[in-house]
Length: 393
Ligand code: SOE
Image 1 (cartoon, rainbow, N blue to C red):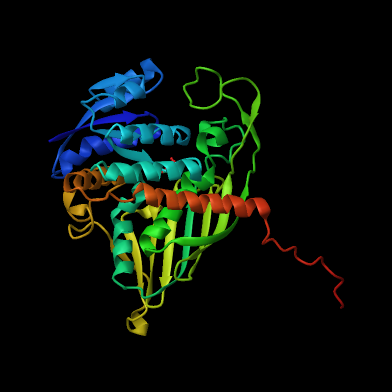
Image 2: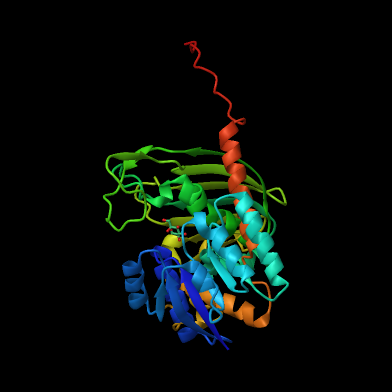
């Protein structure tokens, strides 16, 4: 059978997903063929260019018409968060499998409605998955496998950070990602969602309580000239940033371990630095996206004089996903996660199993994000440090 795919949206994530759809059947033996059938966007000229460039057979401007078509099997949503719920629920109700970019939605209510629609659809053999692609970086999947097999013992602490710096320049225009009505939240939802999902994925536990703070450092940004081609509010002068620039929070996992999370777009010099370190009773594991073919492993059970973090180059055919690619030592990159996402999704659809992360898992991340926002709003855990008193000499 051939799965005919319609992709709604065509920005940065549209290009990454297009690579995934195109490369997966070329490098892996997929149980079903896939066809890049139609890409959808509101601006006809721009979406036509995207279709041509990325190899989609057709382009269209109305997602409702596309979802109603009998010759579409799967809908891939890469639009800003404000349209995820409407499109995903309509597509699932029309019997299409749905892949939806992260974060699942802009609010918990939307995410709940989406998870409910996915559960109803699953009863009819229709599947839904959220695009937390970093789970599918081979080193991250291996990290999860090693934690699950008990290599590092009981998890006692996790440190997770996602650091970017694209907002340090105050003249960076007011893109849609900086507007609450489109993005839901800022660094918290865009990149904090990744580290929350990754923490839950690699530990197999849930974040059950949080305490955190959000901050917006640059509160006004230039509007973009209309026709600039950048998504976001057009106009003259400055507009208000209505989301957070950074989020710092602590989480408590099911088994009691604490996690420190940092999601920021103000980490000067850090372009796309996601890192996670999981410390256990028997050892530790560390992943860093800036060196994504590598997993660091510390074994506390080794002879004392040999202890130290070792570097595992995760490019052997025995490593997750790697057999589909190049000989050992020939590196993978950012886009490979998008290819692996297609491999897993198509495999689950063919086998009739639940593709992970499910919409229910996406909802669990959304609940953590909402809890961080609530914690930041009430700031109840902030304790003022006692004012300086005269020091006796
Ligand atoms: C934001 O800059 C962003 O593009 C995220 O939206 C993606 O999810 C992440 O992969 C890279 O950074």
